[in-house]
Image (tube, rainbow, N blue to C red; front, side, top):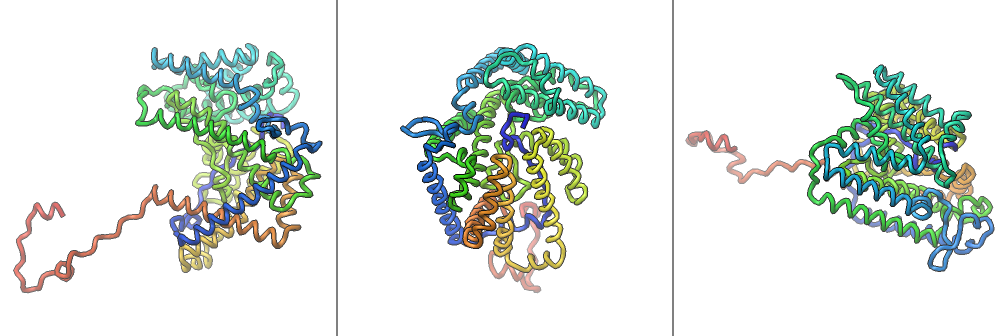
Length: 551
């Protein structure tokens, strides 16, 4: 893939707005003993699968196929170093990244204290200098030329023209000979050159498109090109994202009130410590479970047990979510110190069972939803409009990632899964299915829905494994799960997944009760006399206006 990124960190899923029947019964409760049973089964299955992966890792640490990625580490054990992105951030170039971000925090704090009204200019100047130092003045000139080009087109205020111009500019970084020609503008031969080039270029084009589209929506006048440069050269977001749409960034970076909420600094510090703890935990796990290297050895995979293979598939997706959450979390912590509200971390794969909620980068997800998916899909009620919106959304995503076989397969299956959810919801909202569901209890409806969600969960796992590993690994997992392992492995794995889905639904129910508590029942009458009322021949009391008003 030409973009130089891990596909799954950048791969995006568009948002789906389901009909009411599809989300009916989210507050349906199950008996406590049933939930305890589901949690127990899930925990035992997780430990069982992890024990298999640990055993395979320990017994094959000196395997010849592992030499390239399993290297000496701490604790007298070898360490899995297969993920270049993780090693780059938290091992190889850790000092360089910390130095650049620490410098930004220092200069941003000084600028905010001395001249808060010009703090966005301080961010821009430091970002320009940092990019100049790391990539050279020719690379800065290349980025400025793209910014000036798309800014000039945005002055016309024709939305489709801005979008087409942005996509054409993005395509120049995905196909030859334009890629090689633009890559020649980068100076130096350091190891990060390739990654920083594609990261900075790709995110620059997406930010410029957001600026141009927001400028088209502005009724009076145009934004200045200085605002675009402030937006693009904000260093924490420049190379690795996440993307904030221009309207959000502009509103937050120019606000005059810089007072913090109560305990905000405590929460920022706590998030930083949590990220540090996760980094240490993942590094420790790399010494005991080689779950990134094992999937690359097809010969070894064929001899693994069903539990080890299924556990590998699941833990690879969980790890990729952890990596995205930590990397974006570190950047978001810095941006919060600058009084920004960056995109939230991605939703964990452990908490997903529908395609409409699957995404690994909330920034790109919000960008695609705002400018493509929601814009074309309207209310997301029409099947045709939804199909057009999802096709266009995945078309932009394919261009963003760089067209290749893996990305095309991933986009096709996920686009189909997203539309199939809408078609299924439409069908089951009709008669006689709607009457059947209304006739059963909410708890039983929740159990039946969980059965369908179980199969949906494994579709999400298998489709997104294409971006993380290889088609060979996905085919092997699918064959072992559905064909060779049938019926024992299939039934057991699906039952454990069913338990997982019920645990997810219980958490959603708890959150729904917090966000939208049920109304309190009306108060009962005080006594029988007040319920039946006074006798007809009883004297009527004179009404007191003050009491009536109080009542």
